[in-house]
Length: 167
Image 1 (cartoon, rainbow, N blue to C red):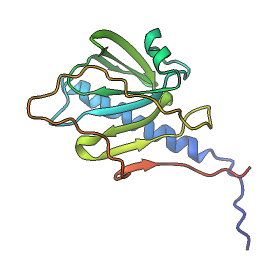
Image 2: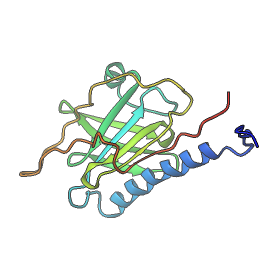
Image 3: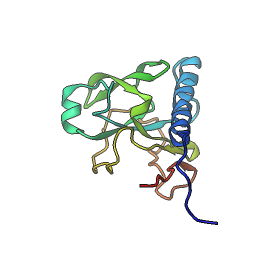
């Protein structure tokens, strides 16, 4: 008996990543179905690769975040729409409105800190670690009495899938 694991002819890691990204689409679709408002204290941090194929963001955001950026979908967003392979949303950045189109394949993380839930994804088409970056600072009117919650750093309830490949 050996410790060598044979290479799979079935791309399990890609299949699982695609299925988990579909969770993001389904959650955003439920927000649309409920009238476009988030229930309770739910809000989402969505991190994505800004240079991934199909990503459409304003040039000033691409310059500021050349590799990866995180957006917050909470109180101030509009025109949220979900398609099979991508979603789009309107957000304000320093009080300047912008429409973002983000393919699900570009997403590297999805967090709902209100319920301590998160998903992390392998970056599509790259094996590099993301460069550190500032938060996008998109405008969000805080609800009175509702503190801003940061994503947990302890990894609780975060699903991370990383299938090792033999080199």
